[in-house]
Image (cartoon, rainbow, N blue to C red; front, side, top):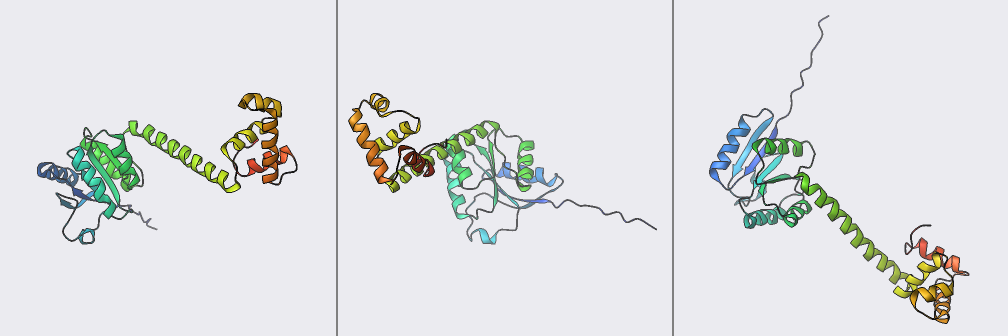
Length: 231
């Protein structure tokens, strides 16, 4: 019995080039035509075409260039008019963190600087087509830092919103936090430079406001609403 051998052929990545410089554009077209697994779906000098994106050929990756900071920003702004599902690779970009972050927020999958080699461009196209994100290693830390900062800012907004919802002032939140640490009224008064009588009144107001029968119950209430860290 003759065995059947199945041959798996790789589906080529279809690339549409939008490159201002004609010489560079033609060079890239010739380069891609020599690459196995890459097809040139089309080319243009500008991202803005007369009849819109619907008239473009089918493609997998949109490759855009930037020959300067101004044009690079214009290209990124123009991406707002395109489907967020498009896999976009920018190359020739300036080494600017804010430009990079703006591009990422608009859905760019690949971001290469001016010194990127042809090998890096080809690798980025294949990587993005395969579902990966590509950027210079230095910008990975920028992303980590940005996400952490946005998380902290969101936490502050959410925290403040929670405080308003249950009607606790900043001073009361500060005070209930010290109560949660096990400090007595006298210790809290010394720490906040208040009288012990004032602290006692604050505690009673908080307990009455959240309908708590004890200091610990008030602490548990605040913790359950995310105003205090979990014990």
